[in-house]
Image (cartoon, rainbow, N blue to C red; front, side, top):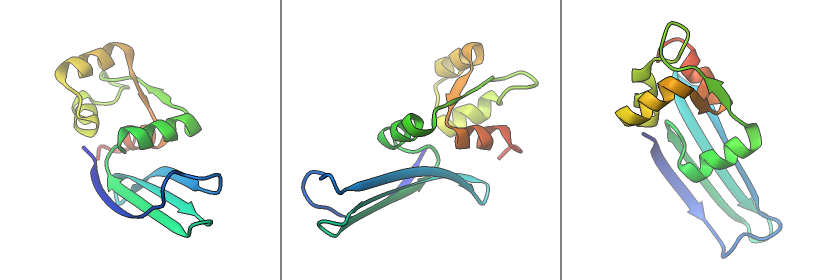
Amino acid sequence: MAEQQMYLTLHGEPCEDCVREEWQSIRDGELRWEGYEHCPRYEAYACDDGRGVPPPGVRERIVAREGTVHLPVGGPDGVPLALLRRVYGLSIAEAAAARKTGYRATPVEARYLSGPTP
């Protein structure tokens, strides 16, 4: 599950000058995510980061920008079921479904899951 910290100073609704960026990385063998919002008009800044899989809204924006990678699950060439359950917090039923159909991960998550066992 994601561990999260948030630091922010905001104005009302986002305006046309607002900039929002989110990204994932692997740092020190851990899956990490970061988000940044900036409004030059109102001099507002917001930073958000955490460990693990990003919160759903952040992950959705990363997927919209970068797409997903289909990963096989289980077996000699697939992502270990235990690792998939630990990283995504999947139930046994969700893990069983992923075993049959595979799992869609962001490119960074795919590198993390396919690398040496974290």
